[in-house]
Length: 312
Image 1 (tube, helix red, strand yellow):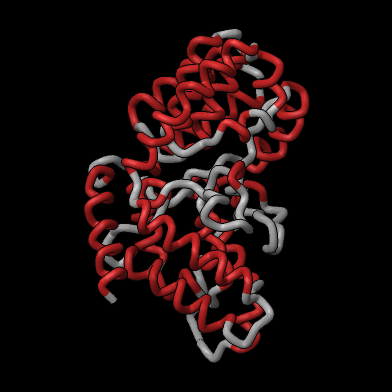
Image 2 (cartoon, helix red, strand yellow):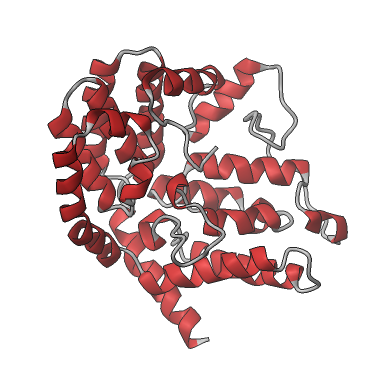
């Protein structure tokens, strides 16, 4: 009980610094950058992305990695190195860079040595900005949930994890990257370091039956606007609830009114052929068009970069 209270108090402290900035606008502007990238207008994309990151200073680690890659495409190595260092301050590990071809192609031994030297202090700065205790607690919850998928305790564990998330959200402090950082396999072996997301929280909301109904769309949108929740995180949770993907729906006795009708065309949901509605709904939540999403794979392959991370 005391530990849970301390975690909630930590949430309240961390959420205040994001209260005055509307990150829904940030994501909508980021979508324009993604459109420039898939259309190979990298000079303009770099300029707009630099301005966006400097103005908003988002907690989303992946965005700094994307910025560094675009700078490398433009042969602006010094700026790319600056963004890599910023990524370290948001929890990115060096091994994740080495999984992306452009970094291996464009960075020389001296660059890697310098990054190795800088990394410990920058990573320590990252750890000082998040709640380590809360982060470790949510990693433990994730691991316990994964380890008990086929046990009789599974529902109880998912519900317990869910209510810890709800407790934070009810206090306007959703446990996002801004509070508990990105996923860390040192704290949960069944998690992916290099997806650069918040699966330790998101997965529980995928498994829980009717999460949006219990949490309310209004509060989740507020979490997006505060910079705590990524819009794509909301969309995949929405798709899971609408499609009743989790096994817990089979034993759920709940009855809920229907969700608002959105079409995101995310995995595990019925795919709409009304692409105008899909793009309108995506834009409302700060998600790029379906056409831009589809073009990302081609651009990734062509330039040896990575644009798609854990938030599918």
